[in-house]
Image (cartoon, rainbow, N blue to C red; front, side, top):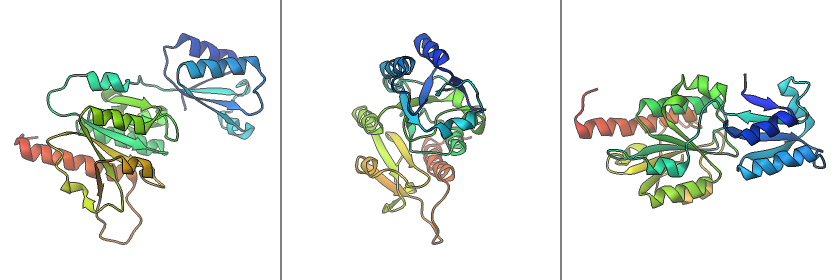
Length: 250
C-alpha cells in the first residue's frame, strides 16, 4: 500500500504540522477557485513540495470516497539535505549514486539496496519525474532505505554543480560512451555515479555536465541491461578496485 494522506483538511494539517516528509501532492483539475486548495498550494510552495493538477481518473486508483480531490504522498523515511550531507565528516572519499528519472519503484529500491551493500554514502534523486520513496521502494530495498542518506533535490543540475564545488567527480552512464565503466579509477576521489531513466537514459543536459561518460560493453546487439542490474555492475567495479587497492580481506 502507498503511504498517503487524503482530504483537504487532513492535508492542510499535515503541511502545517511539518514533521512528516511529504514528497508530492496531487490535486484534481478544476479546483483552482477553492480556498482550501489554494491554501494547500501556498503551504506546498512554502515547503518546496511538488504539487500537480491531475485529471479525475488519476484518483480512481486510491479507492477512497473522501479524498476531496487532494492526495499527499508521504515518505516512510526521513530525507537528508544536500548541504547537511556534504558537511558530514568522513574518513576517506565519499561516493554517491544519482538517479536521473528512475520510474520503477522496484528498480529504485534495488539500486538503494546495492548501494548500501557496497558502502555508498548517499542516493540523490529529483523531486520531479522520478519515483518517490514509498512502501514499494522500501520493500524492494529490503530495508536498506534506513541505512543510507536519501537526498531529494529540486534540481539535479544544481545538485551536481554543488557536488563539483565540493570536489566530487561526476560519472554518467551512457550506452554511447567511448570509455568502459572499468576504465575509471574510483579509488582516489569523491565521485557520483549517475544512472538514467529506464527508457531514455541520462538526460542530455546532465551528460554535458558530467566529467566522465562510461558504458557497459555488450557482446550482443541488444538494447541494454535493466537499470538496477547496470547500477550493480558499475557500483561493484568501485568495490572491486577498493578491495584491490587497500588489500583488505572481505
